[in-house]
Amino acid sequence: MKIAVIGFSGSGKSTLTEKLAKKYGAKALYLDTVHWLPGWKERSEEEKKAILEAFMNENDSWVIDGNYKKIHFERRMEEADLIVYLSFNRFACLNRVIKRYKQNKGKSRVSMTEGCNERLNFEFLYWVFHKGRTKSKKDFFNNVIKKHSQKAIVIKNQNQLNEFEKNQGIL
Image (cartoon, rainbow, N blue to C red):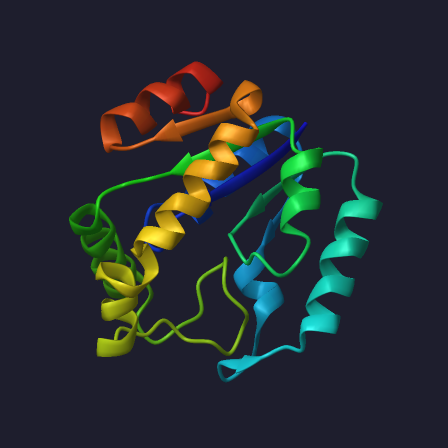
């Protein structure tokens, strides 16, 4: 099974990825760990592409969490057996980000590179609430779902997520 989990920041991509990987015995890859080096330094595009390509080539079953359009996005969508788009509203995502910060304050979470301690600053809050959900980003996600409609699911709220998890046997 190959699953791509995409969506807005704070929507629960990493949590769902972990559950799905466990359920299907698949390797999980969190693209934040590919993008970031310790101390919040960005990895080069070439290195990110090489890491993701190696992961996809070496694993017959995977769950990949993240958007990152520049690193083999089309390949991930094509190869995925299932695409899950978490399209929670901005208030739900903001609430989740604050909760995540409280749980991980001063440390790196599992889905983030070691040495990138959880942070909550104005720039990130602005991204979650506004910049990360522009019309072009929404259109991009909607086009992905339209293109891959036979294998894509859109989850817009916690009730829908609970139902999906129940149907997957992971709730």
